[in-house]
Image (cartoon, rainbow, N blue to C red; front, side, top):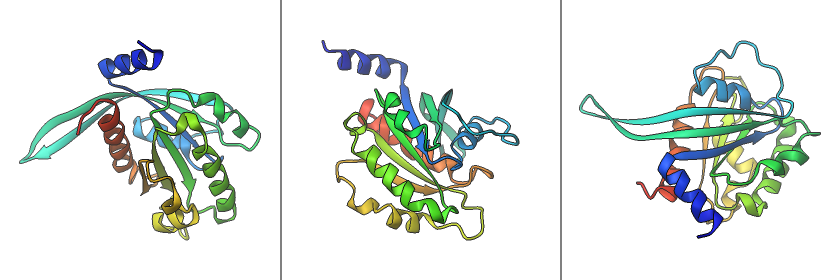
Length: 198
């Protein structure tokens, strides 16, 4: 039995997912992680290196006002700093990544070319080839922010490898809008590949 098979069996038993959250600096990665974990987001400083948050994620379905638990997972979210000087170290976090969250500052129009270039470089990485990709078009609450559709065009997502599972969701780390929708998709997509669940 190979190491990958052993790791998959352990993950299947524990229903654990490794999520790598990256993007340019000041895109809102840390705020997103804190927001989905219900923590205070009033004072946040730039991430110099990385943070790891372990979150128990529970997806529930509503049917005739009855809540049915359809999935409970442990998400290990690796929130990695996005400063230019740190980006070359991103590759140290690629191993065993089940889901990749790429956070875009939808209001930072002048750095969208950098954003596209860095995402393109990530998607060339063989160790990330099987991971689900969630693009969070953050800061939708800011006037003048590009829509998720506009961000998808700038990033040229339609040209992406057709075997890659991806989704783009507009969100606001400040208000929390769109975050659960995005993570619901990501968790469901990873679960359908790893745990053979629909």
